[in-house]
Amino acid sequence: MIHSLLAVANVDGIESHLRKIGQLFRVFDRQDSECVSYGVAVGAKRWFVKTATTPLAVESLRRAVTFHAAVTHPALVPLTYARELIGGAALVYPWVDAEVLYHATIPPSVNRSDPDSAMARFRRRPVTDVRRAIDTVLDAHCAVERSGFVAVDFYDGAMLYDFTEGEMKLCDLDEYRPGPFAVDADRMPGSGRYMAPEEFQSGATIDFRTTVYNLGRAARLLLDSGDNERAWRGTGAQLAVVRRATAREPGARYRCVQEFTAAWRAASTVSTDPKSCEHHSR
Image (tube, rainbow, N blue to C red; front, side, top):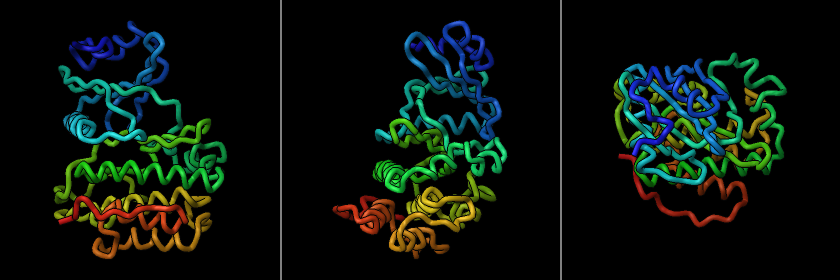
């Protein structure tokens, strides 16, 4: 049975359809992903509807369907409905009352440095709150790893923070895919602030060590007072863990997300029961 949100034949007709069946309260039409998304309220429920029309964007949404079918975690905004349409595809997620930490289509000076930006306000949170958010990100990626997937295009634009509840959620993980695999272009998609060196090398292997690098960069950037990385708010032990996670050579990093997570929690003086990696990079 087709949900009322996607009871339309052509992707070009989605916006007018959503306006007919509910209240369209947000339109995201300046995305570098080539997707157009909508926030719509239907009855008592609010939804996030993401559409794609270009071949690359449609392929990305198909990856999202595969990813969400394999991976579940409380921090991952779940995919609720998906449908191929004439001219493209559409996905439906529940709307999350949280703020994205970075908008790629807004100038960085406004986006992260402005005192009123979501990232600047997040960085002013107590260290315990930031550490809890990082721990959520790591725990979610342990679930990603257990399912055999690696992170691609992970950055603060995929992080939603609920400032009221103090909770981190993750969204737009459309490029995540089973690993390991080889880079088949000049570079992988993503933010240079988070990407590992191998993601810029055609033919290089992308595996769990690459995800470790991405997550190490996330910890480094979230637990700092600014983008210049000169105001680390964590401990020396935590910084040492981050430095190993973000080593230039993959072999010098932690073998997998679980190993990195165990080291991070030990450095954070959080009790942990380290487990061996369930998957190993090949």
